[in-house]
Length: 267
Image (cartoon, rainbow, N blue to C red; front, side, top):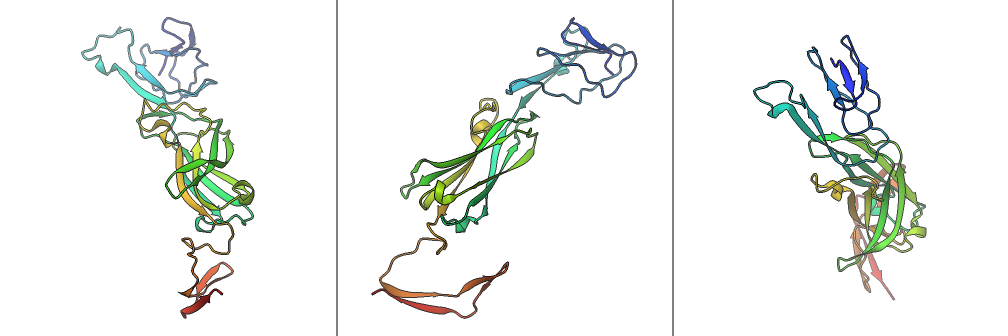
């Protein structure tokens, strides 16, 4: 077990223990180094830490055994171990709660759209909890030539509670589509984690970094809910429509067993 905990090498001794101890926390350390001196102790283990009120940043954490090389060893190369300390926010998915994705129309009372964000990294290391950042849902027009227009509408939520390592967090947005979008058509909707750029995620230090903060999908919003088929209707002077009648009763959906034909003649 640890026998003393010092702020810096040859610095002030903050705690001294004469007997074996467990579950001991040192006082807050000012600076970037904490030294544990072990005299006649068989072993000790650092298995927990807490972050103070410091600005989040990506860094390396190095643990050195016998930093002053006072112990003669055949191999000193394994006395150091360094890990990356970082956060990796990511936007995982977008979910259309109401209406469903294929039934979006401007005359809906409101759009309820959910999403999932996570603090999950693919790099070996220590993932630190992060909080106090924004999450934004934005809509942009998508044109037939493949170009994407400026932001038509966006709504932002704030994450105050810590998002811990490998934790997922559900986000929910509600808004009036007729008021915010104004017109139907093709849109690209994006969920953006840390949309204000408050959390340091350096792409230079590990794969993806901030590149995975956005997830997007293409949608079509109808001007009214009269028709919500999977594609646009074609205008014709006359013709026939073949199909079956589909209807709902309660929470169940039914389709007529007998095919029907409707003849359309515009005069």
